[in-house]
Image (cartoon, rainbow, N blue to C red; front, side):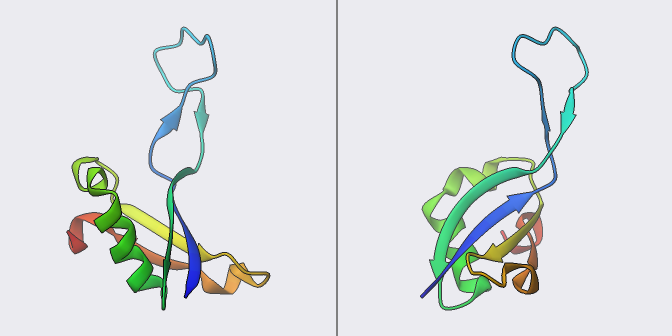
Length: 83
């Protein structure tokens, strides 16, 4: 099986001790790591093993295979469309 990291660009982060009402930083959120025979299989395992993902407002998820040539492995998913 191959290993994949799942990410989303949705969401915001506040700096420690920030008193701002608006988020300080736009960044990538790591949703988890999962294994599978391919990206889709790993995505299913990720959601099955982390049912809380279905309760979030995250939708646009993408993954990379944890491999030296990771950039070519990018695959995109929609949590809302799939679940």
